[in-house]
Length: 137
Image 1 (tube, helix red, strand yellow):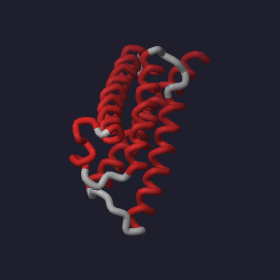
Image 2 (tube, one colour):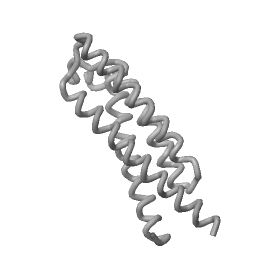
Image 3 (cartoon, helix red, strand yellow):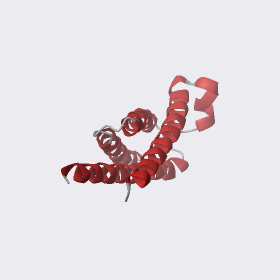
């Protein structure tokens, strides 16, 4: 992969993280702060899932900043976001199995967010690895 391809991938990944992070920050912040009557619109949301989404959104934005400024640490916030989402998924499964009230769509949304985070982390890791290999040559 040449440098132009890496740069395109880096900017595309940063754009995905900025877009998804900003949207998630807005939505989770709106539920937490009850902006625009979002709590009523969301139905049976689960507090700890909303808070995990808020944390993940900030980590997405931090990672995007690191990618755009060509730092060597963007995988770290994505790794933390992935761990937060995995722990949240386990907690959510326990919540559901215990009869906890929830929206069915939360299951798919959490699975999608966790998968997207894993893919972004993998791509970020590949970009970092390629960059480190290039330096050693």
